[in-house]
Image 1 (tube, rainbow, N blue to C red):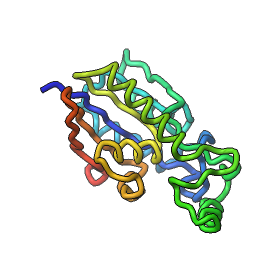
Image 2: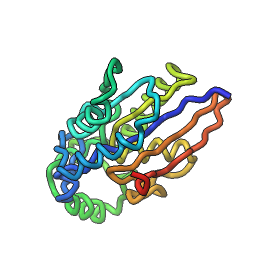
Image 3: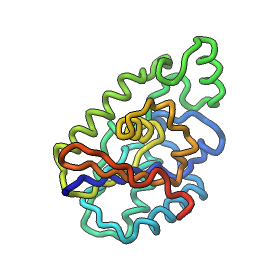
Image 4: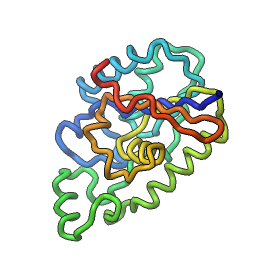
Length: 200
């Protein structure tokens, strides 16, 4: 049976990741380790045939996609802002602990907390779902790569696995993980791999 094969890639580690800084819609800059991670992902996927490659337009994701596609000619990287991480407004560029402290004060979690000047989780989830539906309508028996961010992959896996996003922890979506999802034409979904970090 024909299926749409989605390869979900989180960008390589950034300097900000290593320093525990909130990035959101900030560009982010791959660390040396992040560039190595992107190279290992490239090696892991060298035998995969890609039909389309999409990337968040933020620097850290696009730079990861460029490394992935360096030796693949003729296939453009399509950027889409709907693949951006959630916007954290005034907290972007600040320590992660600042967000966690504010969430604790408000007795909120990531699904209920709306950062000042940022994006509420429901709006974030809706834009990711809109992008997914567009991809499902455009491609059928194809392999499509999405180079994106933790929050986006968290939402997508939550949809595919029929789980609350809170049940998929960051430990399962590290900076050098690959999640592979097969969506059959009848609507059945199979998650082939949650993470292949150990194989990179």
